[in-house]
Amino acid sequence: MTDFPLRVWAPNAERVDGVLDDRRIPLDRLEGGWWLSAQRLPPGTDYAFSVDGSEALPSPRARWQPTGVQGPSRIVDPGAFEWHDAGWQAAPLASAVIYELHIGTFTQDGTFAAAIARLDHLVSLGVTHVELMPVAEFSGDRGWGYDGVDLYAPHHAYGGPEGLARLVDAAHQRGLAIILDVVYNHLGPAGNYLGRYGPYFSDRYKTPWGEAVNLDGPGSDEVRRFFIDNALMWLRDYHFDALRLDAVHAIFDMSAVHFLEQLSSEVHLLAGALGRSLAVIAESDLNDPRLARSVEAAGYGLDAQWSDDFHHALHSVLTGERSGYYGDFGTLEDLATTLVQGYRYAGDYSPFRQRRHGRPSPSLDGRRLLGYLQNHDQVGNRALGERSAQLMSKGRVLIGAAVVLTAPFVPLLFAGEEWAANTPFLYFSDHDAELGAAVSTGRRDEFAAFGWDPANVPDPQALDTFERSKLRWDELSVSDHATVLTWHMRLISLRKRYPELTDGRLEYVGVEFDEDERWLTFTRGRVTVAFNLGEFEARIAADPCHIELASSEEVRFEADELILPPDSVAILIRG
Image 1: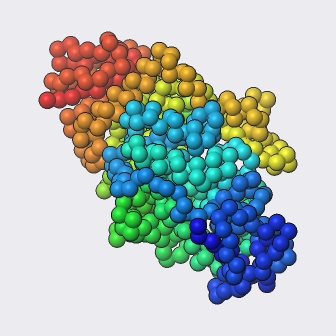
Image 2: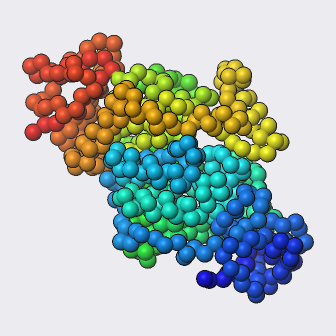
Image 3: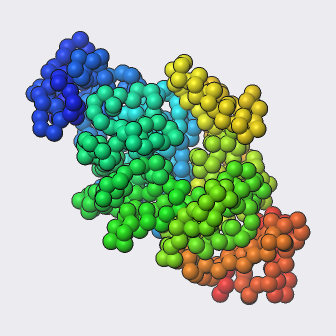
């Protein structure tokens, strides 16, 4: 068994001690603001740090916080786990079908171990990649994970380091790649002690969620190293196949080499060293294709990014919603534009923003964008956490699935979407009384400003809010849910059978639509997708082909016309 020294970066400290129960071990100062203990300690040892005589503080790079964000850190040997995935290679993103889930609500137990028992369902569904919402240690036992503070430590309530390793290992043994959502734009408010150690934060910028990270000011070299080392740890030590970076538009860096460029470069170097494919996916609301453009082409070198424009365009035509940012969408033309150029707003004027938004990119590849009808944000940031199945007819749920899984983007499903789950996905938290009360009040006030009765907004701190968000797997035995599940499985199978459906070249996407009659078709090689959102039967001129898949038995051909009843979709194959 390997023993480890205590090591920490505290550049402004005069003294740093390791704290072991009631005993303190003085650390030696090294160059660059680092401190190191002469004594080495075995895995399983609980420890903390005292900076200039302070109370015991968790380690910034703690790999385990067994009692939560306020407790001691525990030494973990990253090489102790016995892996069974030798020779594993993830499928490339271009051919991926991604499934996003939240560990705490994916199963009744809400643990890494419980999630393993449901992996065979995902294999049967046909997805290739499983994306975990953030699992780094956050305040309390339940939460979304975007307020993490111990970024190196898998959450204690989910099963800690070994539980996470077992989940990734089990996924790989079933042929499933694993993506981890990480948050590098801010830290949560509870248990955030990084500022006690060094200049981790900057007052030069502001984020909507807390202090901005110092990536370009004095002392920022080690701060950047802290976050990049964290990314490399998840990929190297936990065998993750890709990272999803939360809200990169809130990562502020004026350096000549942007943090995102440095991160992507080091991840791809690690891929070469490990001999397996690794990827970095960004979330951004800037509609800037440079994120996923190569460094040689003046980009940041990331592999892909989420496409909210596609979601908004599809969601708004299926539901009729026009409030907030949906005010920029709502027509079939908006959806058609997104299908052929990746973004609806690529330098166009946005009425919602009251300015031009996005950047044009004639060379944008659809395989660089993730497309979805649902995800944690678009469901959970609604006051009542309604999924698509609660906002639209079953016919439109089937249309949405067909468009997502045949569009020229990498498709992403949100856990439970594949069977039209009835359970909501609400915003929930488990902070201490004072912070929890502030979160609850803030949530009610936020939605009251949009006209909601505050009394009807679920309390994030209430245990029931969390419990109601857990998937009910018994729904799979109900006929309507089973029908939706089969539909998703057939669409995923179709996607894998026809190579044109993984061809991201947007210039080869042909779209036709009728805004008045409310039908749209788009064609990709031999495959044509046609749907009707109108009140009446649609008659669409069609070349000779056969109906591969249809959501209604009433879909048919009459002479040279495709007949689509209201709220139906068909997949047509030529040749």
